[in-house]
Amino acid sequence: MPQTASEAVYVDKADLTQAETDEVSQNALAADAIRLAIESFSITANNITYAVVGDGFGYWNFFPASADKGIVPVWGHAQVIETNHPQFATGERVYGYLPMGTHLDVLPGKVSESGFVDIAEHRQPMSPIYNQYSRLAADPEHDPSREAERMLFGPLFKTGFLIESFMRREGWFGADAVLMTSASSKTALGCASVAKHRSPETKRIGLTSTGNVDFVRGTGLYDEVLPYEAIAELQQRPSVVVDFAGNAKLLADIHTTLGDALKYSCLVGATHIDERGSGLGGATDLPGPKPVLFFAPDHAVAAIKQSGSAAFGQDIAQSWHAFLQDAAGTVEIERHRGIAEAREAYQAMVAGTVDPAKGIIIEL
Image (cartoon, rainbow, N blue to C red):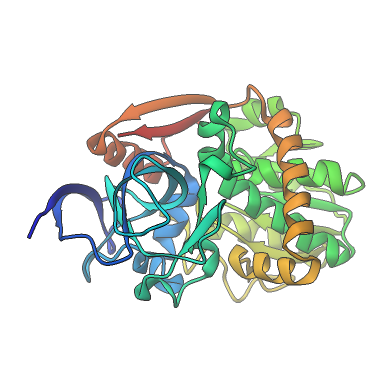
């Protein structure tokens, strides 16, 4: 049986700081399947969130490894190198959800000119949002000159877009200010950009570490930027918090400082992995509202049902182009090559040592 050498980064589920590369074998390609050679992908704080909540939300199940080790999902580009499907030829390029590795076999279904869905049985219990792939030759979002930006910001931006849309539908829960922790993160920047254009009456307050204050202020996406040490100075005004950091103590400080002035507490990510505490950093005995986890795929499905896929796509595209203008020059793309460097970049991201002004792209 013919085999193809493949490599992946395997992460210790019990200790996410531990990762190793390993060679695996792929069997003969299944009927109606296509084999993808992964070309490039980004590594961001979003990937760390996938690992943190991997068991609870099934992220380890997309690209199964073993009981104690997992393969972290990434977003990137790939090329068809082998095909048993009549609608795909070798050489075609796609964009979508990939393993942190070199190859992936998918079983295309619902095939159209612009995309398809992986209908592999093991992927069906998870959100369908992650099983969709774009065929770049007919993908209206594809810009060959902005492939890096799409990998870095695209999925994170959509999460930010969905957060703002949810908050706006709820009238911002009666608040006139939104606090965003880990304000230097790409998801926070995306959310701040959407809020700037679609909810300009809501004050945007970025909270970040002291070392990132200048970077966050330099983006121009926040009305006010404060270091975490200044949380006690927050104004007592009706506010919501969107917690991208997952730092239990930080979130507790915000709840304690604002108390009843805090109208909604939204948990999104976990960029402060060592300080996330229980779950994503949300305790049950905090003053003010109980933190609620924001699961973007569910909100995406709900939004599409509410407005229709065409209108939803148009709204995202409009906000995406505005964000690209807002974010121009804020992040320097840093390219690394090979799976070994992907492992190193992942471990740096877990450790929190990646400069927020750098966007990490892995090329294979």
